[in-house]
Image (cartoon, rainbow, N blue to C red; front, side, top):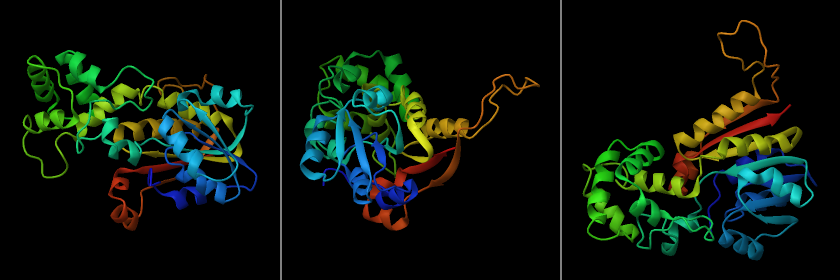
Length: 298
């Protein structure tokens, strides 16, 4: 499979798919969630910035589905471009697809040797190579600490700068081994995991537009419609949690103000926060870090 969809059936159930309803899959990937919605009688408009994902789904997904090349932070504009101003619900999977991780030429994985790339949209010029070989030691320390939550960020950044002074770092395995040699032994997980996550987030700007994307997509959903979001690390989940909390809150004035002046009213209610089942985590270990949050439009 191009990608193993996480919590596929559970998300479809929670979306309460209506026959003939129009649903947004904001992160198409391998089309697993889209196909589940289609099988339940819904229609789908799907967005992805990766040409590989769109081409794969055109050949494998069956049903009433419209594909849009683009990024989810532009969802409202992209949907308007195909005549859609209101949807019945939406799903967003913030993770990297299995295909991107497993294809060495995409350069996402510390487990496979490939050119340092990590671009979700390969028309984009800026890549992991530019981050690793172009950022200053302070910049590298900052993104590795901030996006990777890596306690050895400064040590790793220093090792990168020292190595690239001799010659550019061009391969994923080269970077992974450099990191392994720079930090103490870790019992759980590869020592390069957090740094690769940080560089990937920086290359694709994954967190910069996430909050606005969630708010924009929620604004398109009709009354009673639901929005399911899968996040895969604490940075993403905090953003999703904050957005959903605002949807479900009336006054959002600072606590120091004794009288409400914002006139904000709740537009949503929290449905659930869930993790994949133990069975799913056993069958698909990559699902273990996933957190699902669902909100409903009032």
